Length: 236
Image (cartoon, rainbow, N blue to C red):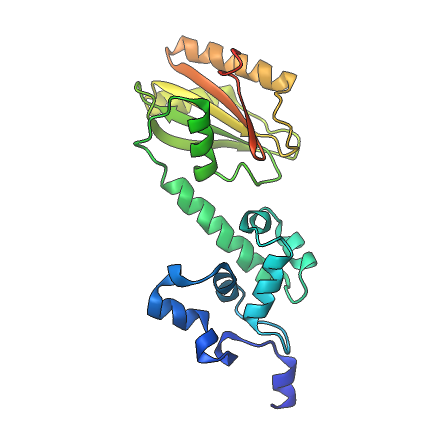
């Protein structure tokens, strides 16, 4: 090994044939790879004396092997919290998770007919990242007359405590796409699912606007970590 070799990280090509995630994926399919191997492909190279697969394993161990915990971290948190992960690798990791989120958002289960708040909660968690993000977002689900989800749209993004919602934009979207009903959704990064006074006032404004266009406001769901709050369930 030359001096230059000793200073560089251990790349995928340096690994034994039996420990090369890319080759394994080409032979057996991407689904055959473990979380460690998938992350190793995203990272690309390890540290001097530490193979990329070992670095990947270390990163996952730092979040108790929970992908959702790693996905919720910012680029700077990923870089600061993991030795050998600089800005470029942190961006690559964040980009991989963001691609996954966007892919899920593009493939809503439009044939899903929802009858309960728990079914709405399940749909929201499968098709948005509201459970893990650390800022507030406000979404609208457009519904058919038979309560089938036609599409899901993010209306606004804000800070850790609030996001600005324009009721006119909600109604324009619903009218333009001929929705028979809507479900509005937002998250509380604090983990407290209880609606604020502002949440209640906004819900009332949306309900009144919906009434003008004969569009049903089916529910307002607040996502707070693993918990959720349904205005409809609470009779509000």
